[in-house]
Amino acid sequence: MTRRVALVLVVVALGTLAVVAVSLAHDDDNPEGIQEVEITEYQGQRLGSVDDFRENSVFGVQEIDPLTYALLVDGLVSQTDSWTLAELSEFPRTSKLVSIDCVEGWSVKALWEGIPLAALFDAVDVSEGANTVIFHAVDGYTTSLPLDFVLERDLIIADRINEVVLPAANGFPFQLVAEEKWGYKWIRWLTRIELSDNADYEGFWERRGFNSDGFVNGPKFGP
Ligand SMILES: Nc1nc2c(c(=O)[nH]1)N[C@H]1C(S)=C(S)[C@@H](COP(=O)(O)O)O[C@H]1N2
Ligand SMILES: [Mo]
Image (cartoon, helix red, strand yellow):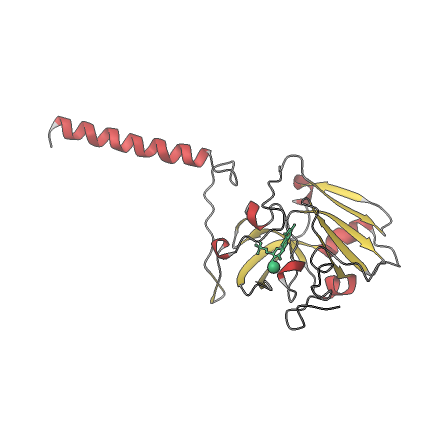
């Protein structure tokens, strides 16, 4: 190998390193530059990928600043409370292998990991009269579920999918894992959880004719 060839090789190698370093530093979802890799299989079952989702947000993808984010729990509770992401990292965690089914006809099975809503409810002490949980997102989107359903199925709010941090498009920092319910119940960019006694509450899509119960095995439309 001539000196010139060796020199060219060294320059190419250094250039490649520089490109990798710069792209790591600019990875917005991943400020520490740690490479997280999505898992593709779990307990023998093939998983979908974050790349399989069809972007269908009513108000576009929301970019939430993790440093100023807080999750508020209020309404029919003894003690309204709100937590930063650092505080939320102290709560118990659960994983679930669940599919999301959109009424538009696509479905993605994934491993969701996050905080059981029951743990948040324990912290605020839900009042007797509450029967409905109304979820609010930063884009103004809302939806709701019966409190009994949330507790019986031990629903979680996910901050990780397939072992990576939830991407902005999937609702960073939290998406409700509304298992057994149509995708419109899986609120993304969750900022507020309101305990209510309004069992007839209708969220964004429910108000526009989609079924209020929203069971995947039930009707898509109508009351
Ligand atoms: N805040 C907010 N959440 C939302 C929506 C939205 O427009 N805004 N769309 C819903 C619909 S219709 C679906 S199918 C799912 C899709 O979520 P995913 O792309 O993370 O699977 O998000 C739901 N949550
Ligand atoms: Mo949807």
